[in-house]
Length: 339
Ligand code: PHE
Image: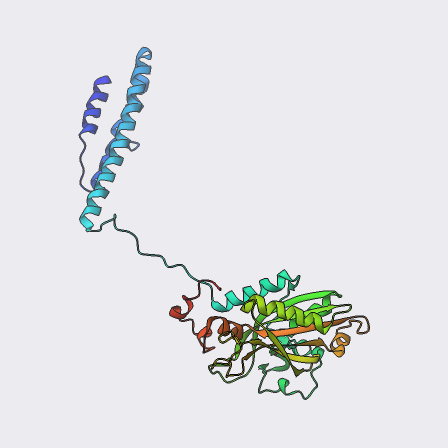
């Protein structure tokens, strides 16, 4: 028995193979169930008891040695093959380009952060809406032009269902489900049936805000928006409110900021006026409070709405809104972070 072990051990030591098939054949010859080493184990019961310890140990060593040898043969075969393939595995890998955030997301998140600092929360709602949430609850008269086919994408089979033209619809949903104080902003995509040009698109993004509580005044609106303008465009920024009209606010205003390029002196960005229009706002019309079952004697509120694309164009100096929707990587990869 000892001789037999010695003999197999010598053979194992000098095993050679130059292909996977040859290695497999060796594995079968030595290590398979009917292989040379396994048959030694089968004969183990014939070993006299006083030798069992020594022989058993040698047999286990032999088995380990053979397993190791066959693995080594496989490894060295792999090395030969890689060397043959002509590939240099020490070369550095191909660079992995990190993605970057879309400029609209960057600016949208910045707007959100500013209003969160002021205690606003975020509300979201459906892009496919009904007439009530987009128009009727917001005091749009039946014949208002915004309801017109020209501006609104309707669902053909049901003119009561449409793509929201502003995220004020989300604020109606907030008023339905909450009682004042309400202090919320609603970011989201909106849709308008407009010709696509450098300045307008049929899809864009808005952040609208709503604040309802007791004793909310126009001064609160102005101060909130001044804070926003300074945070977004820099602390030297000034604002100007011009009278305007929206069905859901009274009084209504449009807000301009001092030109981000010339600071108010006049340049071709502000068309030599010194001012840039950036959002619409106003005090919530009592009719809107009433439609949404909020006590209009007790509560007042303000609302505002801005286009994210417009703000991003001013912040980044982008002249064509269509760039945001082309998904051209050469454009998108330029925006690593705002500020
Ligand atoms: N909803 C308006 C728009 O889409 C913006 C706005 C919101 C104006 C709130 C006034 C108050 O243009």
